[in-house]
Length: 146
Image (cartoon, rainbow, N blue to C red; front, side, top):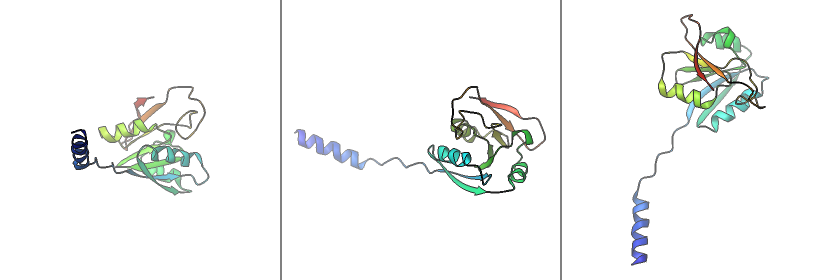
């Protein structure tokens, strides 16, 4: 009886469809060629389900400006992901929140290179303010505080 029950249970488990593995979120990171922290940030994103294509460029300011990133929010890399722009070391949960909520913005950015932010290392000493921006010239607004 026990063997029959175990075989029936095993047969049921084998017959159940396995959940499909989520496809990675495709993104392109334009980065300063000499900045290694960008690669650390890309690896951090990849550990959370992203597939990052790295594109070193000596024209990062031009790329960021064309993408709509306000000058005061531009950093050492700009990421294009699913119709949005991510600039700086934005925590992955905030990036995924934006991709899920699909707000009417161009993108989000974390200005500077704050200690403790993903890709920077060190100990976090202050809250991270992530700004949303658009291409219409309006001032950036606070999107999230981590």
